[in-house]
Image (cartoon, rainbow, N blue to C red; front, side, top):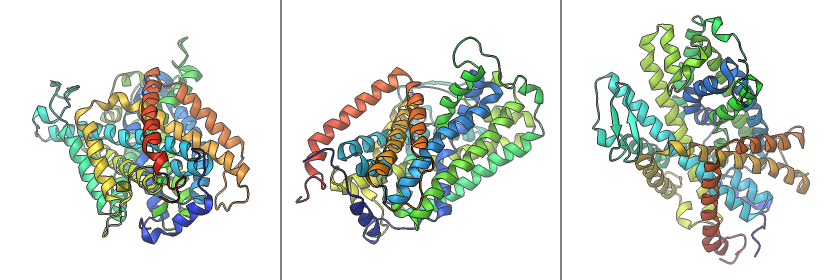
Length: 483
């Protein structure tokens, strides 16, 4: 019994061909692109852009977005090759199982909990904040005890300060509603996601188009502010540090690969979904950042949690302020939808492999979705969203994502060596340069994260290792074929 035993490619492809017994293939290439855009455009675009401009890059935050996109593109190209080779639910977990063995697959599967589950909880809290802003505009005020967790301080736009409530009920509400929607079916969830994506993309484009004529070119001088003498504070090092900040605005495109077993034509649709969503979002991000820093001097974004709203106020289109908040709510909703879906698919696949109890791979007789897993994560994510101030866990989400990217890039190198002739409808170009560049960039970004993030990652992974050796190894179908 070896913890390094790999899952044969033939077995994975056989699982993919048995889709009629499991998950339902309903997602077109267009839906996959929408899933990617839905996961990417969210908190990053509407909040991190201002922080990166004010603290690191100035107007050159546009170059930070380009640099971050290049790093994501290297990982995305590797994801696309694997997704076309192994069209099975599970994303990086499945790819690691095929290349680096069961133990590394478990590690990456456990790691993805950080990215998807805690990411959904974090976005859920942000969603509730914007909902309160929207309700306040119409004179609707929810009881303070029901809009804030016991361990955080909330400051409303009208100046009201709430020192700890009982529960963040709006966050729990949205997580629960989206989980129930996912139980109803992937096709229905994708249809809702497509609508949300259209709403927020329209508003992002409106921000760009309407704001363009109000740009004050003086705000672009100097385009690359002179470095203060401290690494990362403006200059070229500031652009690099800004890339580290806005990189997290790209998190989500990898979630497309978790839906491989529900794609109508995964060999074609996966690369289109992953790379297409990345290209679309990069273009929108650069244009959005260009307009935003043209409307307001970058220094004014320091400490501003809503830079997009601040910038748009300079246009005079005040009637669209409410529309902007609605778009942000739509953006956050689609991000949570994709993250919750991605997490349930990873656990579904790990359960099918015997590494988790069979409870997680039970398929609903009518809806053909892993409904028990959806319910489990509805409770798990709701607890974080409702009772924990998860803002400080954002770096945990990022470090988990970067680790997944590193392992996928390594996996492409391993598969090219071990199985050079395996069918690939999409091939990562310029191997080994692209995967090596992806590994180095992601490791550099991981290095830039706070020490607390590394400590939490080590603790989380240690817990995962214990669970693997207590349960997963003993019940693995690959290592225990007679079970």
